[in-house]
Length: 496
Image (cartoon, rainbow, N blue to C red; front, side):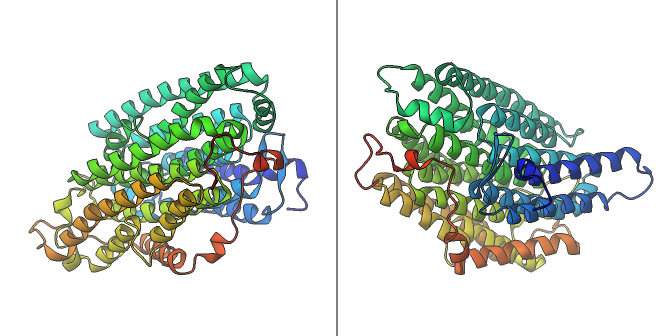
């Protein structure tokens, strides 16, 4: 990295992924259509993502900045590493699935990589307009991925709903940027923070309008209540592996930007927005858990599970302390690996003409595919927060952040909803081990690449659950200024 000019070092991870996407697009345009397209197009994507991960590791503790709007701080680099891991696992799972489903490989991998490039930009941007551009780059790619099975009416409907509601939320977010610019005369997060530190809400109520509009835009992307309506339909209609990608990578990027904007630019008014986010977090955890219990389709169940997990992440945002920031990052890593592995199993068990994603389809899975049943069990236990999995440490860390900030009620709600959620996770486990397999059970042959991805995911789940100290001790922080970090938050509990 020392041979690269300091002014562009922060964009190297994003540039690596973008070049890989362009390579995949070029390969698809010039390849012989009669040749099998399993590789090397997938390998090109993995090379680009490995380049992003390696460059992010070299930039660690460097605090570089490119063009004044992209920050190579540890916070953004950690999310970049998570996104690179999600992208690599997604490509590995996809190696078997996309050809079975008749999806054009070059187009599919290009969209995945462009989406990740937008996500990395979103996670590392310190300017509202750059965050918006990154949001649109990743959103357009994900809209197309949702409906990439063009012959499937359900996928087309899901993509159309996602697109319409996404455009609506983008308008809210853009208006929020406009109001913020009108107030601070800038879209740079650090300058906005300095401006707002000298303001009072009573003197300038438009600050609350800007906050509300930005909150709506972010709440849609993280599937927070009441902006979650698109999630079950989009998750059910998209291919299972795309659903896993959406539920992990998009959430990680959106939360990274959410934390930057609200704990950096709008940190001076945390006492004003924290109660609102408190209510949203509580409602998100409760609705995601309660409605998830009633689902019989596994993809819809995991969609509501994703909503509930978004509520847990909001708990860390409400805490607004250093423990909360670190807890959000650790939870994003554990949730991303766990949920993507779960959707990977669902994708591998599906068929071109049938998803096999109903709860009854998993009856007796232990007897026909014991390996997949065992791997799915680990994923479900981790999502439920059962030790010694990574999910347990993630939830413990999130709730500890809430308690340390004085939000005992929110921590109690989180613990109770987490206990209830164990019911619908264990329901799948019971179905796999204690029910007889149907006569029409499909015969599944998992290739070596997909099995390697599952094995790595499960190893990571146990590693983060048993030996999490390497990640926990790093505690990467946002780029909040020392002034903002030390400022006394008005109206916050004393424990904060």
